[in-house]
Length: 258
Ligand code: ADP
Ligand code: MG
View 1 (spheres, rainbow, N blue to C red):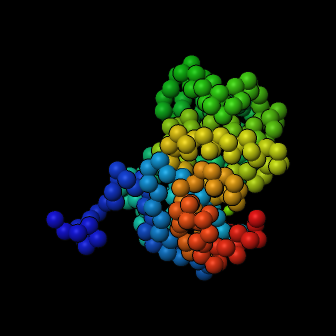
View 2: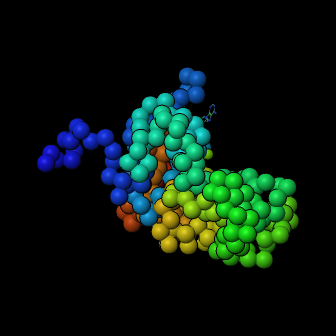
């Protein structure tokens, strides 16, 4: 049995432990290198919080994971399959990886329940009645059970973002990606969204969260990842990170945002 680290025949990662593995991922826009060899593993049931200055590549990293942007170099494995350059994986990846954006991006002409029902009906083939049941369950889960009939413009930002989370959950994703999910919200609404996300993490939803809400990170994250200038500068267990053993550049960044 070769030692795993020297096993050059290895073609996949360890799918039972690592849900997602990025190895040396590169992304270039014209001459600008947005990602410079990023490597990162996300185990099942783990929550990672990704922090770093504006422009450091956090959104690009998330967009490469769910194949919204093709990576130019390196490899991305999802459940052991190399998904990087095989677009045949894209439909499955978009189903199995949920994404929540800063600006909610709900369909304005559909009410909350309809927003949630759309993909399960179109992609999973659920009947309207079954999809409606799913939507009501999820609206309860995100703590707005009475908002099924409300249209986005009748909801607060925090409520809209929770509908967006419910919409992503309706596809039963294996991984949730959140890109600054509370940065467009008024302060009093941040907490209600973070609480829902923390509940999901506690229930074992594998999550990768770009956020500068360090209270959430402390509460929900297993690991903190710090990005700067297209590179992952540090990946630390949450206890170590908040225990004070932080990379100097990460500490300087934290001093600015806290
Ligand atoms: P972050 O989310 O950490 O703020 P981004 O991933 O959005 O950073 O962006 C990283 C860098 O890549 C920035 O300098 C940004 O201007 C650049 N960038 C991102 N997307 C594009 C694009 N589609 N075309 C050109 N440059 C881009
Ligand atoms: Mg961003």
